[in-house]
Image (cartoon, rainbow, N blue to C red; front, side, top):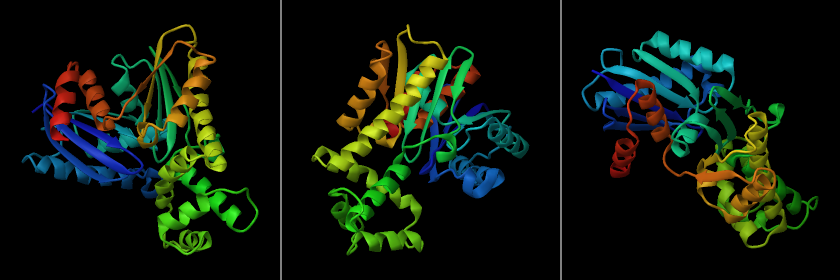
Length: 323
């Protein structure tokens, strides 16, 4: 058979899709977030493999080159050349398919908003990352956190909310409604109680991401500290875009800038306007495309591109029906 296995491994969930050679969607599966920094390369690949196997077994097929022509895996946390090479080596050794591509999930989001694959894509969900492509030229970012100069995404934004809330509660920080919002969100008696819950592992660190909507809501209500956080995030996203456009020498072109991930898909007007204004001040021809389709669709389209199959309309329609 000539099936395509498309994989989107995000920080919060992993999506798998199986398509035939015409782009028809045959099966879908969802599992936990893709965590190479927690499980290691082999452990994270095995977790995705189990999800892929169970998805294929749902349509009475087995994972392997007899059934699967190509694997298109676009994964969060696969940022560096070494990581991509090691991940691809494990996938190849496990014999998932006759061919395979493993790369960062930003490429899947770029493909959703740029049919020819050129442009810039920023993903801002639980984490944040960016890619820029112009022909054979590619701009990447390590996306390793503070050590590589990164700030943003739901987890880090939520941690900043906790910090601001803690500082106002104990008198160190400026006035903000974030303290009351944190107490209400977590159902605790004080911010300190929530801090202790995170410290002792009673709240997993993944719960920081729950506070992203809180900061946008408080900013819209006029809270100055929340507005500063939203503005900082807008500046970080714009910095990614401007750096990519400069490095690719795309200042004079009509370039698609694709915005994806849960935070950007949320459509906060202050955030989006902040990004648009900062980028357009230097690159007025940048054309923003905000996407809210599942990134696994982008992975599927990239897989079909690899196989030489034009299936945009079929794939998108199939996922809309399956939603």
